[in-house]
Length: 436
Image 1 (tube, rainbow, N blue to C red):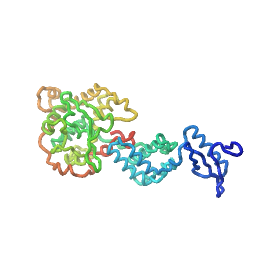
Image 2 (image 1 turned 30 degrees about the vertical axis):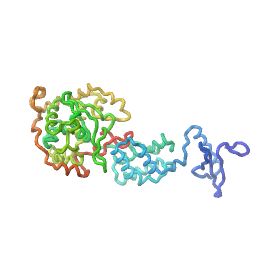
Image 3 (image 1 turned 135 degrees about the vertical axis):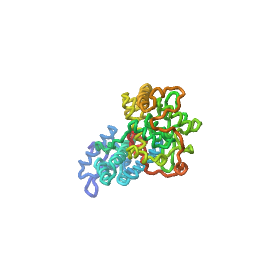
Image 4 (image 1 turned 120 degrees about the horizontal axis):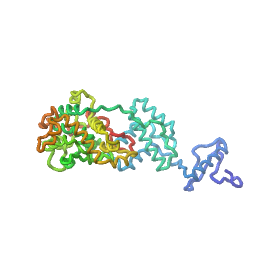
């Protein structure tokens, strides 16, 4: 824009030897910056300077020099600057970036990313056979990285990830068992792991949560189980003990009274006397690895016997959720029992009442007693021996598996541990992970 004697109030325009025009302007730091492109005439260059000045006045200007950083480098820095991410989450983010983002977009400068480029990237992944679920995870990760570039670092004016529905996963509905089927599955298990099956279903526990339970977490008098931690498998590090999947994952759960006697007998037979002794462990007392659980229990053979060969251990949690939902408590109370947490619903779930949780346990207890010899009378009889479900033999005997060999094995594809367990981990604002 002209001022006096041909001088411009903001920036300047000069004609290049090529005949095109270059616009330059001072940034907030006083440094003169050239426009990212040249212009066919002086008026076009002048209009560009007017727009840049307006962005600066409104606080919307972004430094094009900073936008030259490559996406791959920026994404690496984005991950490194999140020290609170758990090891398994870091592993998942880095793997997703390396496998599905960097090969396609890693060398693209942030400032040149656009919705068409993002759409083309996503289309390539799908065309190459990457699953819809994995593409959605990669898209959410990319979008989260770029939101930081927009909102915090102010490198970009807008997020180019704008594809409606691209962040959604349409996972197939997982199976769930009836209580009678849970009973039959228990009967196929080695005695050491029978109560583990029932507790996982009755308390809606994740694999990592139930294997991390310690004697101190079981209150038989109150019929409660406290979830404080979980085991995670991190490649290169093995089993690591950490907090539950989400903030809501730390919880105290009421369990059916009919389960208390079974759990008491299990503790006497298979759990050490120390307060930190694992409730469910190998014969050696070591924690149970995800990758070895199917070998310890002959999981595939056991699930085939009950007519559900594709059942995952995580489906026991799904079963517990379905059984609890039938007790007709409110959604927030049900989600609190499950240990679910999300940015949108955190304030709702964290204030769930203990009374509602006991209502769920009472509902489950009524169903469980229906499969118990003598029903309520036997469950309430003082000093009675351990309650046993129909057809379930007394919890006795030892597993013949070689514990030391199994513990040392590397993680493999395990039909007992489904995709929900292998991928389920908390992420930055739920980037990669759905509810489990």
